[in-house]
Length: 146
Image (cartoon, rainbow, N blue to C red):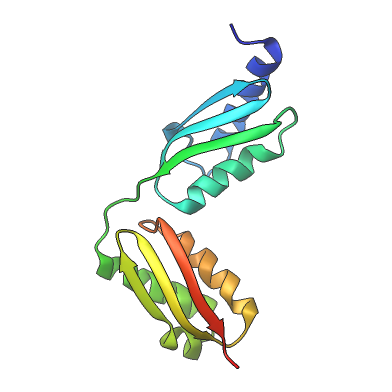
């Protein structure tokens, strides 16, 4: 039987996951033991895993989180992922910079290579690509132009 504090925390964790619209809570199983939350299940993107962590990391009583979530993206054609990556780059980076970035896609992994005008543009580009359905991992090989 679960101690009362863990039982209350378990309900608080479930409520936080359900409340956050960016978290696919119905796919996430949670366990609480001595304030340690374990999340298991499958999500579609790295971003969903991070969103689940963010939703519960600041809850009172959470001492640690074991993120055991697997990432299993919807199966998308590489050409579809490439087009979405290009659109994200056009939105997030200067248009000229987006055109010079090489995009390599394999099994949900996206590799971005090439020059970018400013370091400030790299973060938003990476965030946009990571948030896309079908992307499991993003490797950043972008470099600031001299």
